[in-house]
Length: 135
Image (tube, rainbow, N blue to C red):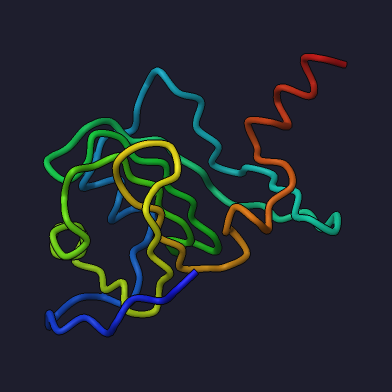
């Protein structure tokens, strides 16, 4: 994983909070939202974080977003937009984030808090729900 180069665009915020994101985008009513999702990290630690899925917008076709302690921690976007366009639309700088191509389609995974990088998570909130159903 590599961090992006410092963004030269001025007036971008360092972080985005849930209320700002929710004002910009519509949550997907077809998906389960996790306002207090339980993440099990590799090593067994449990972390509560909010996880939401958003419908198509002018910047992405679909997005999954994790907020930890009220701030954007992880962003997974299905999009044809460039990284620069996404930053401008969200009004947030990715200069301290890890930006990687999305593994399952076109788009990006943007990691602001490495706790929520895929390789650090053992069980996602939706997987916990699936485990309950199987038992």
